[in-house]
Image (cartoon, rainbow, N blue to C red; front, side, top):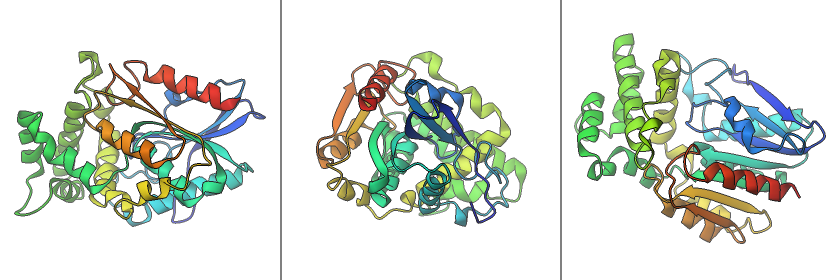
Length: 302
């Protein structure tokens, strides 16, 4: 992909089927096989890939010497386009969740002529307001957990928590980096689990030291720069997407990405459809979010 980056990708389903590209969350979560379940393999040609710096793509951002200046939203959007061209796909359905929803909007903003439909869940736009909500204002809901989260960051005077974590995750001392990664991932568990069944936490993926280091480093990198996007740019662009069918599925109990984010995007995007799921929070493993996503891809395939 240039910049010393190599991207892992896979195509699943029907080689002659309707093309779709899957944008995973995080940033840094990787495209695990569970993402395939939203597409009928007889109907879709679903393309999954690990975004720069994570999963099976190389180099892995868990290594503190890996340069993150070549890992921005603009770089990821360019990677998606290069993958589309490599696969000789004219247009494709864009599917994303959580951070992947932000990336899907950024890609659509840059290349609307290449997007046939959009399906998003756990909708985010990674605005400064959203980052401040998760890292500061959420203290109002879970103050004890937030105090642990803040204390582990050891912020300097007037330093934002997300900036403090990014600093500690770049520390030359492995123990400092790993302690920061553990604390960041524990906070992720704390706020994502609100409104979910007890079985939703803790996430076992953070037990992998490479994963937690990669995940924490990439999330703080993107969050501290508000996704490298001008404030309000995604909502402003959505007003021009009326020709692109879109479905947004969001949990009514989602605290990590409150429902007003998905609501505001649906209001800005002409003709889009918003499904608010009463008994669901952030993610797809509870409530009827997965069922609504499958129904959307089936409907859009026809």
